[in-house]
Length: 200
Image (tube, rainbow, N blue to C red; front, side, top):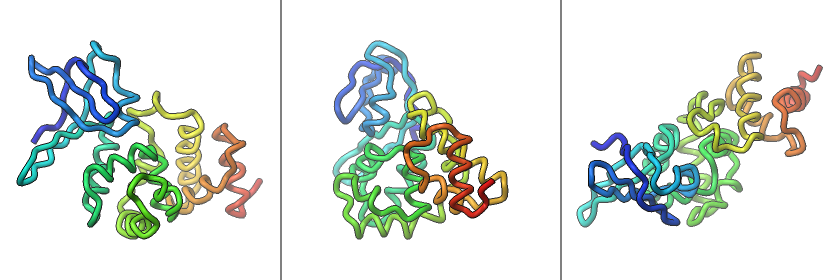
């Protein structure tokens, strides 16, 4: 099993990255988020990897974070969701937004991904909503510098509500219902508490 590839970026394509490692170029299919976050050609990069072996082919997939790889594996574990569809979902929604969409049952957000219809989105929610961990709802971890500031604030707000005793799903639903006009963590928490009936 290949856990990660660490080397020099030799190519960045719309749907893949080539990393030169020890004189061998490894082509990894990636989400648009990973490609955007990957360093420029000529720079060193480390991508977490997954090797998919089929009867007629072997394909290598790359991820900017362990969280993205974990979510990819969860998605491909759902019947009817192949690696390409999983990358499409991860190209449309960040790991954090995808986690919130699954927990809150937001099929419309999931259906924005290419090849994911309403029925498939509902199946993803049914099979994965209970598998999303609290850390995926609250932490942007190694992707933090590539994530919009408002998303980081949302993650912090969910964590704050959980610290106050709210369940992860309840906290995620309340935060996701707060309008986009609020970008600071404190403001999001305040608005979410009002929706939860615990306004100050």
